[in-house]
Image 1 (cartoon, rainbow, N blue to C red):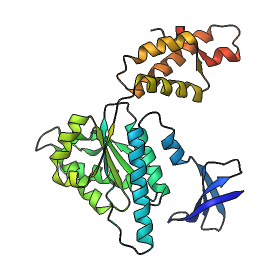
Image 2 (cartoon, rainbow, N blue to C red):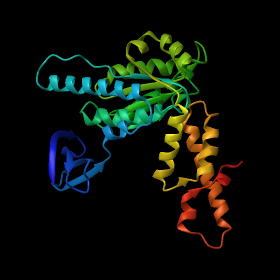
Image 3 (tube, rainbow, N blue to C red):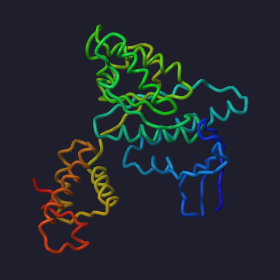
Image 4 (tube, rainbow, N blue to C red):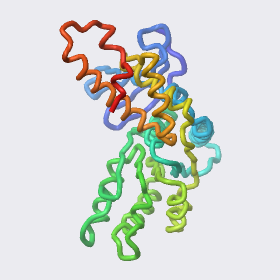
Length: 305
């Protein structure tokens, strides 16, 4: 086994570890975490390469390019600091702006993995919350719930979808309290926490103006365009192939027609295909003899209402 570019990493819970690229092994192209435990035993954990995961996304070229710049800047700033050179205090909190089903949650998850890999975040996990997870029903309840969410996200990414819902109730709404606690948490934990807020373009623009402390700590705004019909079809073909299904020629025609009505929403592609898979299962259940080919092919019939 040959190892390229080993990088030291320290985890308070696991002890010393090394993250390495591995070539010429069953794990080629993967990241392997090798850690020494307190009892001096060695454990390893093979994880997906976050760079490959980012590059494999359909469409989103501007998003991918921007994340490459952000990650490179964060990595270089970290190295400068480690070598005693002057480096900027980074604020990597982000706003993801775009319609539903354009990949915002998927990208947020990859952001955590990438920034963990380059040593900015200690864990890299994604904690996804919405208004109901943060806003309480009585005085003091909101601060407690918001702090708990922040604590769960420490070392990784706190992702707040439709974040503007925190401000929808007016001056006396507890959502404002959640925002205040969130801003303080972003400042207190800026070394090991990234907050990503997401939502529709117009609503997000108004939301960021609401709290002066919020917009000053949210310097990175990334726009997510709707998927094109061609990109939606590519998402569909990848989704089926990964699950060892394929589409008949007539099924492709029907799906292509359905994609015209999706308005760039990638999430709806998955819903359509999962419905077709359920329809296929019902169709096959009545057959006396089921071949391997039958199990793999989704037909035009499976896409009918």
